[in-house]
Structure formats: structure tokens, C-alpha cells
Image (cartoon, rainbow, N blue to C red):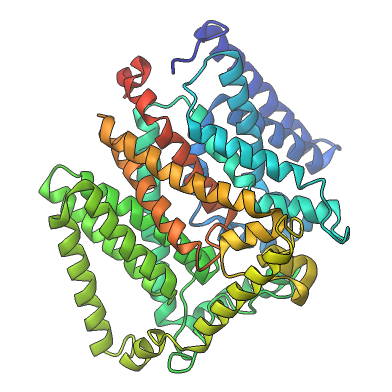
Length: 495
């Protein structure tokens, strides 16, 4: 695990400082010279690459920290930047970081150290190789352009490179603490906003529209929702708003909430003091409330199963039981007080409701198509990416694994399922064996999150938010390597 320095540390730091000073001077020169802002932006990008290469662990922390606010910040860039190129760059910032960090990881792993190989590494690598092969395959009709296939690859499997980044990071204790701390802070912010949105949806829709939300969505797809906060839209609950917070999407918020609840539950179950348990219990309940405000039934079911499972594997039912009790009481209070009408709850729980039937129909249609196309129709033909490319002709699966199978065939879909299960197993082994409390907590969060997303992916395209998928698989990579990190002398000496 220990990284072997090629140059003496003092010399490396000296070189880095000289380079940073030189780049800063170039940025200043570009801003005041006739070369203008273009030169300054290029120099700034170069500076960013140098910083990311020099501080990969802190860059990973930043990637995770910006998950809750990523799309809102891009909207601000779109509204105030008045530049499609700048907006595209803002949308691709996470992809650029993953690309740089991937090369940084390869440099560190290949040239300087040899981390232990896990079977999950081979499985994820095989899935990525198959996905890359489908970049060449234009589909059975030969109508899918390379750019469309590239966009489909980005949506389906690009985020898995973050797993190898997590596997290759050289971490200190402060990095792991920062990952958990920023996730807590981000969750609190988005859930506070979600609560206010649920109470005043029209005001927030007006606010986001003044920031150019409708135009922002139109630049990406004409099939996006006109309002950032939409109504539930089913009989009996048609007037209920679905909170989206700063993720600008109710489904995106529900996916993030699964992640946040897993982290909160892990903190609760690994806490060693009564005061910490009260605090983390309240945080987990608050994260669950944010999930409920999205009115996403499948996500709520997945979260409950995930909490029960995490209580089972840790044998701490006395902590999960009261938490679930508080959630039940809070739900009853919300119904009695009229915050969420009982009639709406009854409508949402109706198994014959039209939305549930539509989900079932989409899955059945997808299975029929898969039977005729076991090797897939090509990248970019399903889900939100397919809608952007093909509009109403795109295939809706309501199931992440079927979406992957229809694009790349049955084998990659099963590999992804195996990878999700494998990440949970590896995280469980790390949780049982590591001694560092933060690494144990992170491993337990990945274990719970892997189950939550595994279940949710059967009912929704749970991995369609790229920055969230990157963050989770980055943490999964850290959890898989946590056993080596825990015994690394450099990590043990770190603060």
C-alpha cells in the first residue's frame, strides 16, 4: 500500500510550488494581456490538472462533496455564464476529474506499487472491456452514430472507472473523515431545501425558472420536465409535490437519499457514545424524511429493507428498531396532521394504480425485446440518454439491468449485478476485519448502499445520475481496499 517516491519529497514539493507559481503568473498575464480570457481559461485548466494530479485524495473528497449541489451549480453556470461551451465544460467537470484520476491511478499502481488484486477488480474490468467493445458496435440496424454510442457508454459504465480510482488512492485518516463529514453536510443542506420545497413548491418553481431552468433542460432534451418540482400525477395524490432539492430532480434526490441513509445508518451503527448515536440517528431520520418527500415508493421500500439488513449484519437491532419506530410515528403524524393526506397514502399503496401497471408493462415489453435481441440493440438506445437521442422512439425499461441488457446484451447486465453483489461482499469483509473506525463506517455504508441500489435498480434506473454513481463506486473501491489501507504503516501514522 505504501507509495514509493521517485524523487525526494522535498524536491517534489519544491517543483510543485514552482509550477503552481508559474501557472498563476500565466493566468494573470492572460487576464490582462491582449490574449484575453481564452488564454486565462486554458491556463486555469492546466492548473486544475496539476492540482488534481498532485492531490488525488483531496480531489476525490471534492468529487463526493459536490454530489448534492452539482446540478444546481451547473444551472448557475448556465444562467450567469451565457455560454454553451462553458455550460458543457461545467457538465463534464466530473468526467474530466475521473479521466485525470484514472491516469493518476495507473501511474501510481503500475510504476510505484502493486496493490493486492481482488476478484471484483477483474469482474469490473471485464464489464468495462465489454462496454468499450460496444462503442464499435452500431446496433443490429447500424443506425447508431459513434457520438450517440459514446454518450451511452458514459451513462452506462463510465462511472465504474471511479471504482479503480478508489482502489488506487493512497489515503490518510483525514481523507476518510472528510469524505464522511462532507456527505453529512451535503445531506443536511439538500434535505432542508427539500422540506421547504415541499411546503412552497410554486415559489421554488418560479425561482428556478428565473435561473433559466426550462431553457437549461431544453438544451439537453426536449422531453425533460418543464418544472423542477413536479406533482405526483396519480389519482388520489395528484396535488402532492415531489421535492427535488438542489439535485433538480425528484428521482435524483431519491437515489442520493439511499446513499445518504446508508451513510447515516453506518455512522449510527458504528458510533461508540450515546451522544453520537442520538446525533447520527437524527441525521438518518432526516435523510429518510428527504427521501419520503420525493414520493418515490420503490426507493422508500429499498431504504427500509436496507436499514433492516444493516441492523441484521451488525446485530444492533436495538439501534435500528427505535429509528424505524420514530419514522413510523413521524409518518402517522404527517398523515393525521394532513401534511401528507391519508387518501394520498392509500393511492400510493394501491398495487393496481396506473403508474405501477405502467412499470410492469415497461418491464414486460423490455423482456420481450431482450428475447429477440440477446446481444443488445446498441449503446444509447434506452432510458434518458435514449430519449435525448431518439425522443419518443427510445425504450423505457424501468429497470437498470434490463436497460443494460437491451443496450449491451445479457452478459454485461449479469456482470453488473455480480459486481454490485461483489462490492457488498467485499465491503462486508472489510467491515468485519478493519480496526480504523472511519474505514469500518465507510465499509458498512457501501455494504448497505450496494443492497439498496441493487433492489432499487430492479424498479428504476438507479445509476442514471453520473456524479452520484461515481461517488458511490469510488467509495466502493476504497471499501474493497480498506483491509490493506488499515494495516498500511503510513495510514496508521497519519492524522
